[in-house]
Length: 417
Image 1 (spheres, rainbow, N blue to C red):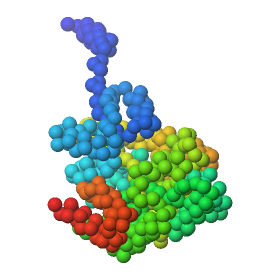
Image 2: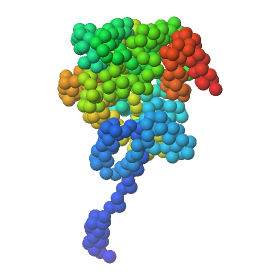
Image 3: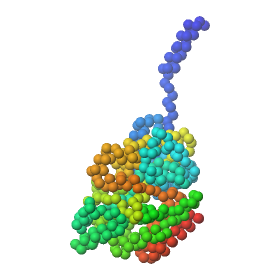
Image 4: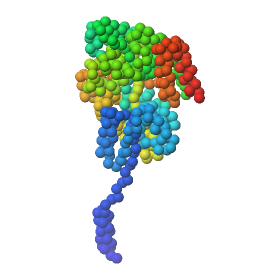
């Protein structure tokens, strides 16, 4: 065959190959579970859809996995049966990654493209197991002090001048507002809280107590020392002086929104909802404190539970997208959760909403004093134990010291079992 003919055949083959359709690259499939519903669930699902649109090679199967407790139960079972999702938005996520020796995310968050230092330092503590990062913070919240503006104004209090700094300030103010309104024919409580364990842990840290001790990875309760007793004694004083009702915390939010409670500690995640639909005029001020301002973190984190590296890497790309300044801040503003990034708080729309709604300013400003104690397996059990302890203190079935000691003993037994 002549050289010219060979060249012609080669050219024809090249043209044929160029014209032939290329085999489509296989889609990456990711399963995502999320433990938030309502506006939060809708906002999170919208971000997943946004990612899918920008990444048509990724097929996401997303499903609501129930509340935090339900999601934890399902993830635990799925890990045992090897059917866990690739990504989960859940509370206490580090227990399911770091708790199983999976610290894949530790190196990923240190990649320059993620900008780890842009996330508030205290928020990172919420993502650790044994001191190592194994999750990415996401729907973060803190407790804040809400108040009924009508009840406060009827008591002649100007909150711009009289906002409480310490818990003793709050006690005096709540009692004043309660007494003046009740003298005029009302029947209200001065103060209540929706989550007693969350508040008690916040108060412990404010008083110099770390909630738990950790020595060489071993956890033990720390809350029954003199600092913890001071907090428990103050709590009992609120009950004894009838500033706070006995054992009504599960109904506290409803009572507050019905106009029957003057001051309420609840999650900052209520801001968005209450700003639009509260049946009473609501505002908020910074949390009171004992020795130092601080608030315990709550909320959810993103974890990667996929097994093989290719799936983990694809999941990380999704997590990085969700935790970007633009997307996470958008999620925060639509749900009432907090921006996790300093650059998020600096965004013009965030500055504007803080100006328009002082409750957002209160919550966002508390990010600088937010903290999280060490994650450990019996965290949820500890919260249940603290609820029981507080109930015993409020009902007078145990002294604050005896209740603290019993709670510490019960927790230690759980840890040792």
